[in-house]
Image 1 (cartoon, rainbow, N blue to C red):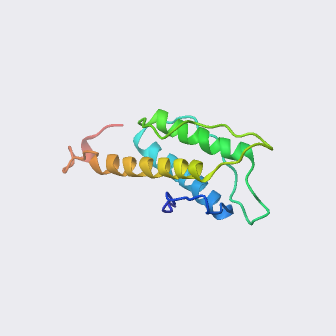
Image 2 (spheres, one colour):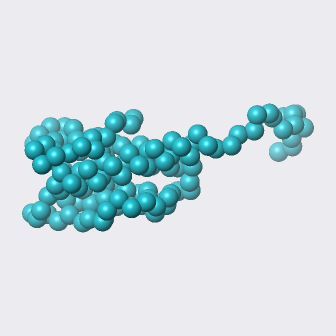
Image 3 (cartoon, rainbow, N blue to C red):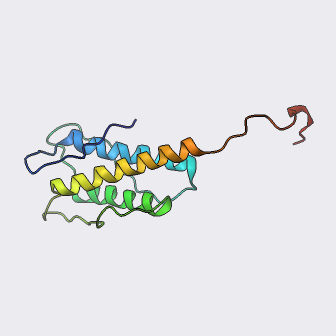
Length: 135
């Protein structure tokens, strides 16, 4: 289920497990939407939701989110949202700017897929009768 992303992160904001779950689940939702409009594309499993404050995400989980967003953009329609980053254990963690970039990219993809879905052409009538079709 889509959750409205937070695109106004500031240096004073704290990132917690609910933020991680929102971003991860929004990316998974975007993949489902993309598969309705495009052919299958590579996607990395992002694991289960975090349950509490002691269950903080690891670098490889942030890398999976980055890779999946990059795959979504490259396999659907490309737009510039900043540089794709790789995260490493025991190094710098994502900043508020990184969270703004990730969540803004999710919102751009969501809006783009919604517009594409709305613009799909559909016939307003049925061609032929089902009894005349041979299988």
